[in-house]
Length: 237
Image (tube, rainbow, N blue to C red):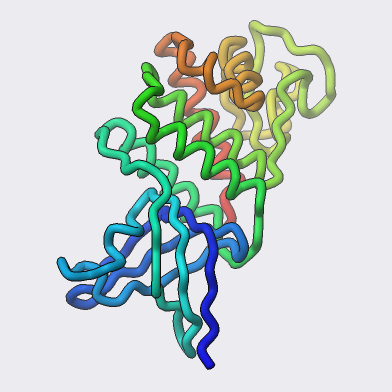
């Protein structure tokens, strides 16, 4: 007898195969990452197509075959993202998830965070001024949940006080380092005190304040460079 599985799933990637099929890469509440085969879902007559799509939170049902998992039912629970700038953020998030999430390992905290983040992103009531900061909110909180907790209060290497005029980000040391310790990592990134304040605020998950913030172009550039450094160093090989 075929066993059917039901779970909540966030769809972060889709790949078209054959003439009308599709494979959805999803992160699920019960099973972690799964690749689900959706047969004939690209046909107009498909009963499944309205229940699942890229960046959707869906209740899905699937069966486990000999070589693959096949989608049998789906019901979408969040609003679709139609805004182009929000879609750009979602695509960047998708790329991060595809890089970091590799196996079937249950992670309730990550699932709850993804659900909350995409509900916020798709909510038309949230007037977003800076989409770059929204992505940074996702990225730093996501890698924190993957075990890469950041030290932003003191120097991550010597635990000394930070000089706001001489601060660096070190992925190797796991956070902000002082001038004396920046030589321990050949790939440190110079940042400023505004970036440190932003990282602290982001890790507090203060979404409301984040939406109101104005950030200088230079601080935004430095924050982006730090996140790229973190991704290169933390991403599983």
